[in-house]
Each structure stands twice: as C-alpha cells, then as structure tokens.
Length: 526
Image (cartoon, rainbow, N blue to C red; front, top):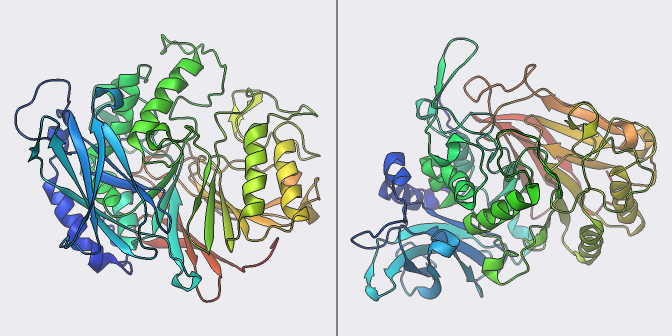
C-alpha cells in the first residue's frame, strides 16, 4: 500500500530535520529493551523521540524521556543551525515520572518556526551529555492574515490492532506529517489500556496481521507501570516519533486511557481485572497520561492537573478542550428529567460558558471527546455519550448540552463548531432547531473523524433531540474492521487569514478527501 499525500507548505523546511531525527532513533527492538530500571553505562539517551504541545503565540511545551536519571536541557533557535540559541534548563528526569519530563518555553516570537533540540546531561557531571534530538514547531500567528491549519483524529491502537511492520506501522501519522499542519488535535483514546495485543491475528480473508508486542500490552493495564507501558507503546513506531518531532499536539483523553466506558465510582465485574475500583485505575492512568503528553494544565507545568482547558492559537482560533470523562455521572438509561452533573460536571460547564464568552477568536472549536447526537450504547440498557435514543425533549446528559447551546445563542457567541472522534468512522452532522425537539439554539456543525489506528465500526444511530442531519458518513458495514482492510480517518481544518472562512475536510489515509464543508466567519449559527 502506498501513502503519498502532497507535501505541505513547510515540508521542505521541516523535512530534513524530521528525517535526521528519525534516522537517529533506534529500532523498535532496541526501544523495547531501553528500560531505565538498571544502572547503564555511557551517556543519557532520549531514544523515544521528542514532542511539543499546547503551542500558543508565545509559549509551548517540549517533552522527552531518558533511559536513566538525567537533567533535561532544551535549546531553541530561529534556524536549524542553532546559531545564537536560547537555553532552557529543565527538570531532573527520574523514576518518579518514569524518566519523562516537560520544559515550558515562554517569550517565544509569534508566527515563527521554532527549532529546538533536547539534550540529556548526567546529573553528576553536566559535561557528560547524550546526542541532541531535534524537533520543530510553529508558534501561533499574532496577525490573522497568516491563517491556521490543523488536523484532528483519535482512537489509536485499539481492538487488537497494534504496530504492524508489514503495512508500515502506524502509517496514518506519516500521511498527516506530509500535510504539515500547524498542530494536531488528538481527540481521545490515545491508548487502549483495556486492549491487550496478541502477536498475530488472522483476518476474515485468511491474511495474518502481525503486532509488535510488549509485556505491558499483553494484559489489561492495572498498575502504574502497566499504564506507563501502554502510553509508551506508540512511541515504538518511527512514524509517530517523526510526526511528534515536526507537529505539536493538543491532547485530550476519553475512556480507553483507563478502560472502556468508565465513569467515576464504577466497580468492575470484568474478570480480567484484579483491581475492581475504577477510581484507582483512573488515578494510575492520569499520572501516566500527565507524564507522557506535554499539556499546559497538568502538574508538571505547575497547574492544577485538569485535562480541560482552552488553547489560544492567535486571533483566528481558540480550541476549547473538554473532559467528558472525569466529572460525568454514571452510565444509565439517561432519561432523568433533572441532571446537573451530566457529562461535563457543573464546574466544567460553568468554565466553558465563561471562556466562550471571553473569547475574541474568530473561530471557537469545541473539542469534545464524545459526539453529541450519535447514540453510543453501554450494554443493553445504558448509554455512554450524550444521546440516549429518545428523540424528544432533552433528558439526562442532554440537559447540560441544551443549557450550553441556549447560552451560545442568547450570548451571540459566533464561530462555534464541534470536533470529535470516538465512534471509529467519519461523518458530518448538521444540527438545526427546525428539525429538533429542543429549539432554543442556533444551527451548528459537528464533524467526526477516526480511527487513526484502530478497528473501524458501522455508523451509530442518530438521536433527534437536537435535530441532527447526517450530511456525510463513511463507515464499514461490519464491526472491528482492521487497518489492513479499511482506510483510517482524520480531519483537516483550514482557516483562511484573509476571508476568515473555515474549511473542514474529512480525509482518509492514502490522500483522499472524502467531504468538504466551508463555513463563514462572524455568525452565531449556520
């Protein structure tokens, strides 16, 4: 299979750097054995690549992992030659963070290509350093005419489909890298902690799928070490490391970072788990999540540890990253007439309304880890997302969404759209009060894309409460279709700096654009 999208606008600039970074990294086999649990000779190495996250016009975060105790040092410069670099001394990387660390960068120039390199130093002798590993990112523009372009997707290494060297590994990342976006919005299910991998899987047509396997991916994750190993797994893939060195991320989480369909206070009956208390599992998962992604509100940056946040990306765009997992009520038939907890919790909903009101960005992307109008069941009687299949007036978690949509309308908040993943197919839904049981809102769009590297599933049923019309959908007709049998999906958002128009493209691996929608700026609904 060939994957050869057209190079993006900065591919030439970034290509040589990304290629050199990839070539400097060891093979998956070497990485798998690079466990910093023993005394090692030589100099510190950052064999897992580098990544940047939550980049704004003047700030960003840089992440790395060492193979032993080391001091993390970051240098930034305007060119790949690193003439006149700026030096940032980072944390001491040790076992308390699984030898990972994040360095906040501040005072960066807006709208510029930032080149950085991470060097690890022996904490007992700073002259003993490892080989620097380079990366790059572009800060958000200070002026709107520069435009913004980003990608989004989710659902990574799920349903038993891991890194398969026969098909080029996690090849969707290379398709995305060649498009050279300003950033990537990872919409949750970054790992499948509840999805062990076997070495081989026989497909319906008799072909054999081969997985790269590790000890931590051989069972469901329960201990902190097992969760850390799950987050580390995708970094075995060269496509992922090369992508991370070139494209900064905005990362959120959903259920599979802990286990399928979890909610606070849940007690498991799943025989695979010796730990039945989901809150204990979630605490382990949250720590590993905070260690393996550069996120501006997590404890490593001195903030309060929230996953939900707003990332400002210049005058054209604010990204409102939701956490529809941590504060939700229990999954249920979800038809209660009064629900103040909902899927976001009262405090997060209040925060979201406040931040939307404060935003002066032309476009306000609401990054949801679950869809609004698609029915996602949890067993025979309960429901996992917002919709529960009753097309009438809002009930249960729908009440919170109705409150938010009403707030957006009555406060004349312009330029909102919803992006999500989770359901393992790609689609575009238009919501309109003329079709809805609840009518006190302005029309809006929701776009779904995924999986990025997992099994594909048929399209979910629609719930009519908010009047969705599925304008486009591409999905398998059977469940858990492997990435060897079906393309993987990601979306693209392109905001024109001159007109302010926002174009959404739903893409498939291999370079195909499946659906395009152009939205106009300055409108409350459309």
